Length: 283
Image (cartoon, rainbow, N blue to C red; front, side, top):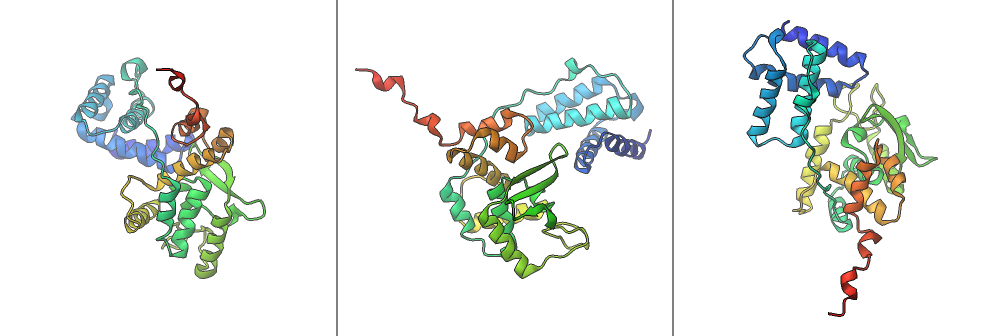
C-alpha cells in the first residue's frame, strides 16, 4: 500500500464514520509524521512500532499529554482500520491526562481588551465569542440565518462532536452584529456571517487568532490568553452571576459534566466564601 492509497482509504473511512474534515486533517498529518519516522514498509508496521513511536514522542519532552494522545488515536486508526492490524489497547494506552485549570480573565481585563477594538467586524466577532461562549471555529462558521434576534439565541451547527446546539445571544452581541451588517453588508454564496476572501468561503480561524493577539498587545494585556480564553471567561463569569452550572454546560455544548465542573475551581463563587474552621480556633 502506498502513502497515497493510505490517505485515500483514510478519507473513505473517516466519511463512513461521519467524522469531520478537521478530524481527517488531524489524522492525516499525524500519520504522515509517523510514516516519515519509520523505515519499514507500511504493510509490515506492527504494534511494536506503534509503541516505540509513542516512547519516542514521550522522550522528546516538548509535547503535551493531549498532543501525544492525539498521535495515539491517529496511529491506532491507521493500524487498526487502514492496515487492519490487531492492536492491544492495554499495551498502547493513552497517557493519563494532566488536570489543569482553564485560563480566565477578570472583568477588568475583558473591559481593557474590548476598549481597543473599534473595527465593527472584529468587535462583532469577539463580543459574540465572549458573550455567547463560542469556540473560534463556531464564530467563523456562523451563517446569517443562525442568528435568531427574536429569541436572542444563536444556532451552532456541527460543533465539536458534530453536534448542533443553541446558545444565548447577548444584547451587546446583537448590537455589534447589526452595526457590522450595516457597514459591511457581507454577502457570499454560502451565507457566512463573516465571509472570507473567496466567493463561498468563511473568515478563517487563524485570522481570528491573529486579530486577538493584535488587540491583546494593543490593550497592554500581559497575562496569558488566547481566543479560547474568552470562552473560558464567559463560563466563569456566568457562574459568578449565579447561572446554574447545568445551564452553562448546555450553552457551551459540553458532552459531560466534568468539562463544565472545572469552572467551579476558577470562578469567584460562594464556594470560596465558606468559613474556615481554622478561624474558630481560640489560639
